[in-house]
Length: 336
Image 1 (tube, rainbow, N blue to C red):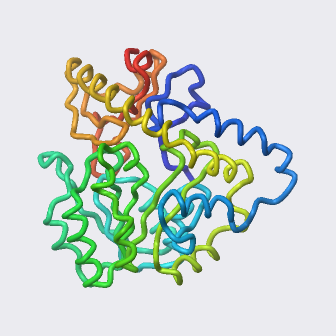
Image 2 (spheres, rainbow, N blue to C red):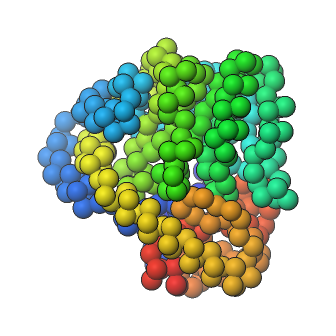
């Protein structure tokens, strides 16, 4: 089976600067690297299957009960576990959006329907989406901000969607993995709504926030205890490695690092966007740590020849050749 194409293929492009993966440009915090190095002798043991210490620290950080948390080998593992656990018959996805939602749903035997996001409307989700949330749909995935567009869905609309899903008995998954890089992210997150809606699951990840995609560490927030128990049974035992757990515990102490990263991204995104527009690109209103734009066809290969990896978005359903995504990196890298 052919693997889905994503960004971050530095293994076949070792001499390129990677703008194709949306990772914190500061790189992993020193404390995280030290924690991983310090636990090297512990890899002789199985990981803590309960992720007890990590879950306790995460509960403090999120101000949530540990029983409402599930930790996975990356957020992607939890996406698949949701599909296997809920076994929806019909699901709805905006288009374009993150590819793993569709892959997980199809793997679970689900029929997938699509709601196209129009370029004319800036790829924004609008109130029209409420009309397609009918009793025939069992499950909905939303990415906020969306990937690859970076477009945010306003909180008021999210609440309307959540209420509509509750009314129609639809399970709603909201992927907030890129919300960490949004200005005033608290105004958009739905964490407190999990107390009121058992049909809501929030996806989050350490990957982007702390620049540790190679360790695979994600988590979910949900008050539906029966669902979380099913998901725990759906994932493999010892799914979160010793180094990943150590990295997560150390990362949760890095508040200053996160603030520094947000400030850097705010400044560098404005610079990179301005330069892309100057070069004739059409940039869309991304609120995440990446910029989504339309440019000339064949740009990926041209950039690769110059030692730069960018994300070709034409393989996203709903997009065509000429759409690209670039991560915001440091000034020296952005100048390249």
